[in-house]
Length: 220
Image (tube, rainbow, N blue to C red; front, top):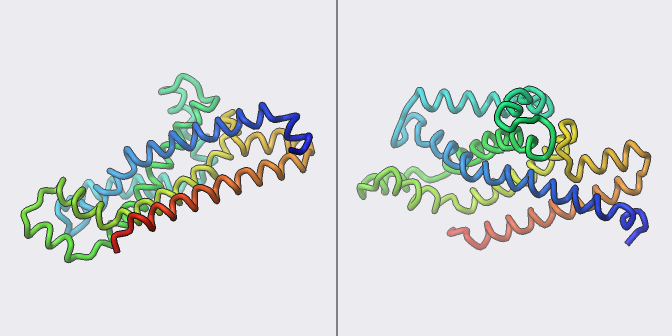
């Protein structure tokens, strides 16, 4: 191990831990809220089982607005809201708020797109068998799109890692923040390069894992 990594080993592990906390919270928000929101967007579309123009318009507008924000500006814009619900706008815990919000919007759109790829015949078959909305979602839609949902989640996680590098502006920490503070600002280019390599390896592992799982569960 290079001497500079040994020198900063403790700080590096702390920054990796902070990244996992931020990305883990974002992942939880994407699954627990992004998946239902994306599903509702699909179900409320014109011609779908619970068509509701008002609900679709409101959700679609909110998702579009959040996704259209440059993430750094979204972080700054949400500082008062973050301070209101967390009690502070600084630190890893505070960073979870904007990350979770962008995670919900990001993954909900990917979920909607995956569900739109479901053949119309599948929906027609489910309805003809008298399936309830819950049964249509869990026994037909999610089964048909499970591979796409996993790939979408994999793509989202990689985006969350990228977003987490920006959280240094609110003291969120993480690998990216460490690379900037200790590598770039202190002119330790080799340390910054090592941190970039760590992030590349992390992203490659996530992509490989997600692609492998998607291939295994692909029913086609």
